[in-house]
Figure 1 (cartoon, helix red, strand yellow):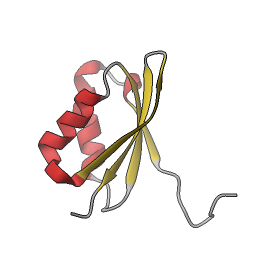
Figure 2 (cartoon, one colour; figure 1 turned 135 degrees about the horizontal axis):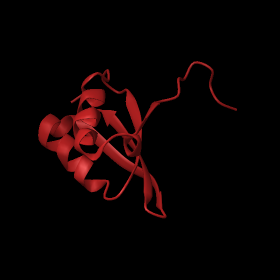
Figure 3 (cartoon, one colour; figure 1 turned 90 degrees about the horizontal axis):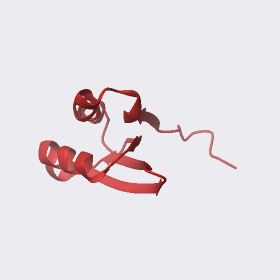
Figure 4 (cartoon, rainbow, N blue to C red; figure 1 turned 120 degrees about the vertical axis):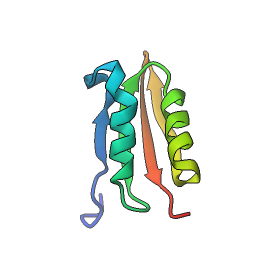
Length: 83
């Protein structure tokens, strides 16, 4: 049973955006996260490019973990670190 005091993370589906807007939309969503808040990101292609993009913009404040990847789609959790 889930804890009713725990909110579900927001989901950003990058595949719904045009390719030229994906990285900027992810960075904008990350910027508005509070410390220790997380965002679920889903997309197609190489998820590592988005991890590198966030890492270059926000340095050590990004905690990125891939939840699943199959059939060309992936799902990751991105958390803003309190460092």
